[in-house]
Length: 193
Image 1 (cartoon, rainbow, N blue to C red):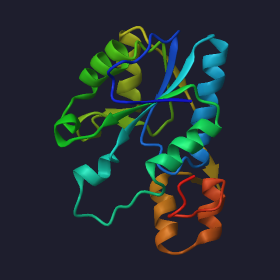
Image 2: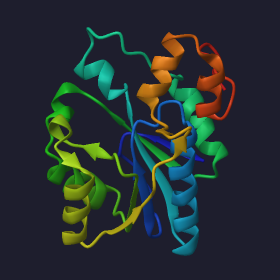
Image 3: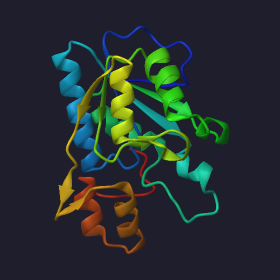
């Protein structure tokens, strides 16, 4: 998997199929998104691209909180690569960047920089200033921009959605069996890969 820090010197990808997110933990919900991403790229004879952020947006927006990342960026990249993804682009996340409206993000980054052909996203997807871009209006605006959208159903575990925030709660409670089940691998905070 090719890894790009920032958007300088990106290659011209063939029909990029893109998923955007923090992908912290690369848990079973993320694995579902990545599988759909890889399969959609194969169907379109395109390139599967993950767009993620460093540092994690929550550490920038809420530095006073008890937030912590599930894995290091390096481990998350390793787990993304294991899913057969072609490339990952890491955007630096800053307070200024956080103020970008979702439409501007789609126009400048998703369309203008990555030349995205298809955007893959789950039902709880949100981005842009104060997460103003949510699933429905992102979907509508992308269609207006000529982007194809692939909707992915939510990954469930025991009737609950698999989310990084839920996994963090179980880590705080030292509920390792639930953490490992939702991650799909044994949790180890200090393990790099």
